[in-house]
Image (cartoon, rainbow, N blue to C red; front, side, top):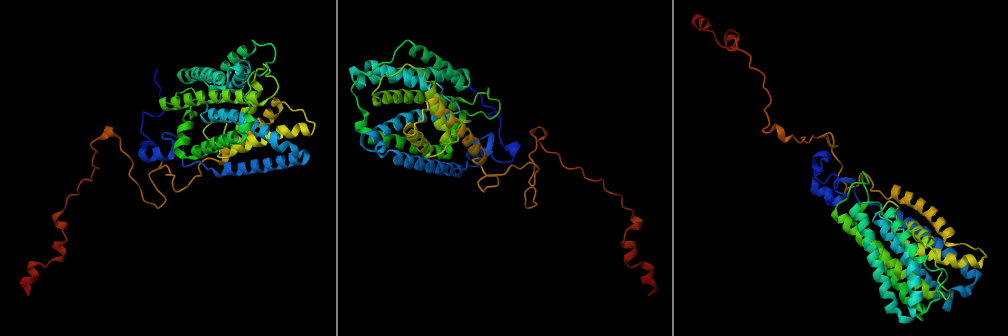
Length: 404
């Protein structure tokens, strides 16, 4: 089964007037899309707002209960941030590839239940099978998306339904059997998550990587295949996002002293995708910020601790829905203001009429069907009347000479 790409069979030079080699360097898609670089400034501006929100909510939490950000409570808060952060990174990665993975929530709950039941065998023995099954499930999901070329949200929703069937086999909450306590390494885990989130954002800001990761984003008919490279990148992103979701579920289960409830996990999906959109990741794919995921995860995690201090009972559905609403506004913002600025020096302007601004003209490409080119038709020479020759009027006449 081949992977065709719309417009890849023809050169972009005849239609735009720009050499194809130049287009390949400045276009996100050499034959489609907008030339130039995405503007990252809009993401940095949005991230400043997230930083201000995080600082405000943190101050309110410290003012309400200073003990909530000290010692053991702080370590628990950091582990919760890492768990939610892994889910947000998983959702954001699939969003950047334009194939959102809606199964991250159910996968996290299934992995948490598995760890709760098998935790007494040790961390490695219980974590290994969960990660392996998640990788195989992510690969099956990836093959369904890229081979059939169907929307990622639809295929992952079907996968989520299959995982929910596995979860519903348990009718009661499961107590965690293992003794692994991640709070002892809370600082290292949070530093690792922060490094992954920020470095991923920095690499995603590089034009070549940004173009490669977002290559699956549709540019014309969404049912048209986007090529083998886009399929491979999208498949890898779906596998990685599923594995990250399983790791997040194990970490959250180990950090919670209570039992793991066999819920559908779709509320975690809503929360994860809401945080990813709130971070500035576009719902259309490709575009995203640098520090947005780290700041959005910190903001939501601190707010989840602050809400009970004020007596508010807010579920993941409420917080995730609110994050989704604000995140959709952020998507509109980055898609409108994050596009390449027209008229920039690195953007070659398409030439459509054969003229440039200085008034000079460039020759239009000729069709190969008219080769060799025909010479212009010259006007027929006019016959010369010998009696009208100027020399008969201007030159000296013989009889005038004889008279002298």
